[in-house]
Image 1 (cartoon, rainbow, N blue to C red):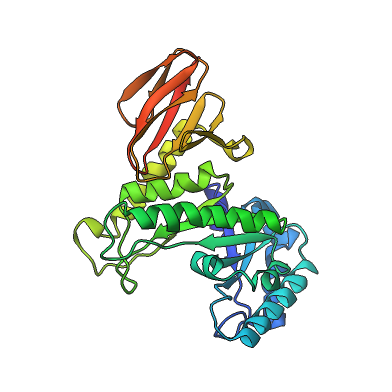
Image 2 (cartoon, rainbow, N blue to C red):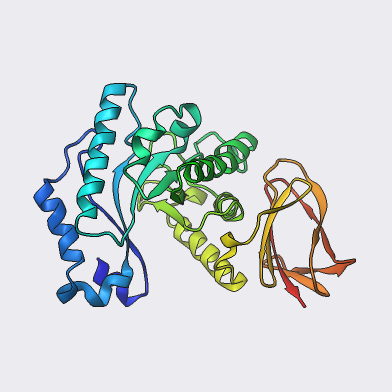
Length: 307
């Protein structure tokens, strides 16, 4: 897997199943064998750039049994310390669920000692929820990434945001629309997420506009948009606000997001003469040092400013 990814310049997060949740994980010997193998310079040196980080633990907080939660946290910490005996370079991530963070944060400290990176996923798109549903997009999307960043910063950790790329193959879920995927991604980026992932599946038991075959195409469009906008490193720029619109800029690119269900018109500072609004077949004039534009609910506008 790591070798194959290296051919295409891709990064790999290697999942190791430790005894973190309801099923027993691999033995310590097997655990270390994998870590040692992927760090063996004789075999994997040409591919080391593709090994991004280690992951163990998927929603370990999901239990109402406090004692069980403590045991899981202890196992995660044990595995973390074990992996660090042979690999002090690659970080360790565990994935948590947004709803757990939002509803109860008493258990956080138990798990934070066993990770370098806080992974958080949020899957808000259920069947019966309208496209761009107000409560879903405002609370479960925008609010989730806000919680993630707050928790990571509180404990001095890195963080990864994971969005929903699956649907009807799971009970009560549906595949997100392109607009929902786009808002979910840029809501994370404009709040400072340095890494964004999609959890996707290949279910084939659905049809119509929610067909899972559409989701990879949507993701491809978003990846192309990000490359065109040239936004690498934008998370290191300051987060700004114009009215209710939140935005960041890097170079001549401005990403602006409306996290509300209200239609608003705002002015965003820009230096130049005009700005192409990416993938909207229009441009806006820079007047008085500002781009003035209207945002419908949950709209994302990306401005490529002409100096």
